[in-house]
Length: 326
Length: 277
Image (cartoon, rainbow over all chains, first blue to last red; front, side):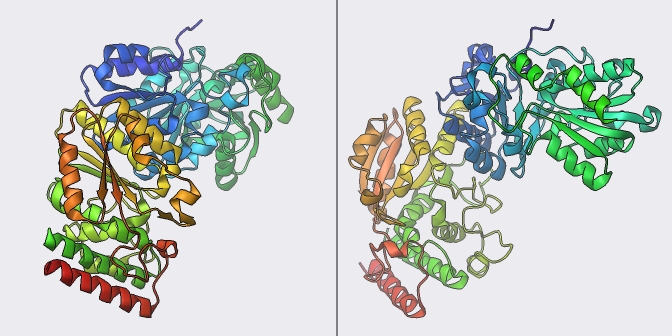
């Protein structure tokens, strides 16, 4: 049972890199605990900025620091970061093209019991519709670490959403990772996972289902593929952590060699992964696409796993959807 | 200072031409803020086309981005781009000289336009400057109508908390906004006290006097414990004469040909007067 949440994986990378890179700065809005960034604040007080409960200020300050050469990592609950400070993300970060990495913590329905004010089921839609804003939802802690390392190497804006709770490891110490390339996982067998650029699509052959997932839904998607394989149904899972820019090449290959495409996400049915995948598949290689997502209603409250189960956002729900639609 | 005052009226003429040529712009605020920008760019800030990428340069953000015509005119006079090209291309289809500051142009640090962003961004710049032990200063210019944005006060709060004495905010206090008087739309009673209470040094000046502004900026440099806010009392449409000054309608009115001639003549008269004072 993994006990390290993805947010902690980000902190670990920043702690290591900040030892030699004085330009890394971390900004929090009374959120250093929730962000797992307290160790960073303790270790690097001169590279840490507390702004108090003021998300608009948080994002603008980050942009100002980035304009002066800092690599700003800005942490706040995804629900607030993606809406309260939306205009700052649009104008000061994306439009002004500042090197700010907006990290939405406790994303999706991590705060399941706390109600819609604390749910961020709209952040992918909001952020991905801003020009020059990339959107990443890493799946497990290994991929999160690889993503953080990669984002430290570029100077461009990005929004990263991670959940509050630890998620089961998908990958091991070796995590196939190339920036903006989905991981291709045949039949849910993570031992065979590769970055899409290295995938041998011919060898992968024809599949019944292509399952495209991101963030915390990737784990259930992988388990669903294993369940399907047990029943003799071949599939391919795309870990589409890069929702924007979407890895269209991999998507077209996977969808082109499948009878059915299923998307799974912890997000509203509008403007998220499902919408992006449906748009691309419809125009490039028309196939039936089923979007599994949270409903367009205030989500029922409870522990996030119970909420996922209620809406069928789990391995059994995904496998069942596949079997019913083949 | 006489030359700079004369220059401020010349630059207002450029603004007038830009607005006539393009058929749009925010002339009232351009004319009120002009002396603040001229003082900053020609007397105070360490910024020029030659050092625009130097990390030690002074930083500037025009938070009241709609006064972009004045800003462009000053940057052109400073040598960042060609004045004739500016007047010809301002607001033209596909032009980089768009109706709000655009950092694809040399000399402009941040895009603005939506109000209430400049001060918080500059707080970040000032923090970064202090972190790197640079001696540079950070400036922003806001409108007074803009002060109704909550994000401005988040910026005041953070700058006061962090005692950012390398930060100087200027308020172009012309007391008019698009719907009328600022005090009727949303009052800023006891403005200086409000800002002081956020741990800021506050200086009131005549914002259409380059001499007074320059003194205030010098005084701000001496303050080592707090950020400074200069409340620059200005006249909206300053320099445009009786038909234009202190009239809310000129927030973004485009002059008729007759008005253009009148305003142009008045700017010329004041320019001459400044030179022969």
